[in-house]
Image (cartoon, rainbow, N blue to C red):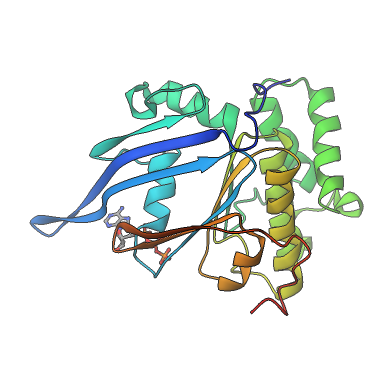
Length: 250
Ligand SMILES: Nc1ncnc2c1ncn2[C@@H]1O[C@H](COP(=O)(O)OP(=O)(O)OP(=O)(O)O)[C@@H](O)[C@H]1O
């Protein structure tokens, strides 16, 4: 295994307290996170919803070690305070434990689907043979067996997003962060993507944290957190419907 054993379903994977993030604005500052407490559990698909500019992406960045908050603390997996680690240790934590899926796919234009996934695994310390085997399996799991040797220019938007998901899932991350993963996709491809995120939580025990504008995705969630103007205003637990369809779940 390249990753540690996953936490049990229901165990906390992230517990953040009092997160404050400010950005410079003119001569002053704008406070984008205003003392946010947040937690996410293994096995849960947690949706973070809210209007544009409410602080959703900033929250993900603060939780994942990408953007240092001015105040607050992030306890995650076996790390009591992520932001107390050195920059190198934070990067290593992310590499070992976190997967990321963003709207823009972030694929390397020159690499085939297989190479996109292999590269990350080799970077993590797998031998080329191990990386190839695991990357092939991950791409097969997202239905891309016939596309292993295609480059991004010859893949559709839905296929590109599936490569990005295979790349994130191949290392079996304990925490999976997704930021608007379906917004560039049509209903059918969006459904494939949300079902894969659901499976990462249910079958792999990952804590999946998904930022979205799309209320139709709520059907797959265990928990929905609403954020407005840098504050959590609602946190609701629900029973997901893994068989939901995007077209009929309005
Ligand atoms: N690097 C930065 N410098 C200055 N302001 C920033 C920076 N990053 C974000 N902001 C501001 O912080 C606020 C929150 O941004 P954030 O991207 O977290 O919102 P969001 O809820 O994810 O929005 P969207 O749904 O539109 O992606 C916005 O007003 C944004 O302009």
